[in-house]
Image (cartoon, rainbow, N blue to C red; front, side):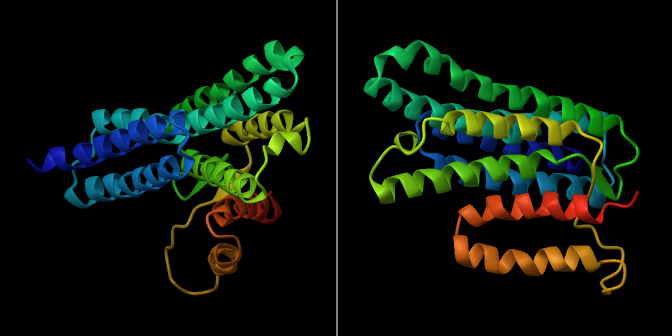
Length: 243
């Protein structure tokens, strides 16, 4: 019976990703982000449970990658797609000549789901990632985009206008950001993992600096602070990487 427990938790991750995707298409980005976070919690505990119960299996590994691509690949892509679709429709309504151009742009967001799948496949085969990561982890990428879109929507609602009326290049900037994410997912940049062999300061300086800096970012920026934290994580990894 215990051998089924980790896979059950993994399936809960997958279901969370499906629900997140549904809410993304409904335009409720805050709920979509919530279910991505719930999926991340399940993702954390499925591997831990498998190790504690000594029931790791090849099928569990494959199922985990499938669940992760739904929750951390397809769901954030759906959030970006839905947000761009709504804003591009608003922009095209003001200028009908832009409709044909802007109506196709949001679909490019799904490239991120494909690169997330590629990143997960590489992770399964890469033996260098036992204590750290090579490239941006898919949960971090998903949290960044979920928090970023929630923050943009909140700002737009507070200002009471479409963000794209502020600057017509914004959809292209968002898509450029998704392509940067795609690169970071599969690049060869070492990124630290929050795994501790010991709890002392020595050898864990980067991890403690990162964790301590997360607190003011969340207090100052709220949900948007998650996006800032992921950006800071990438920057800190690049600055401190060992050549």
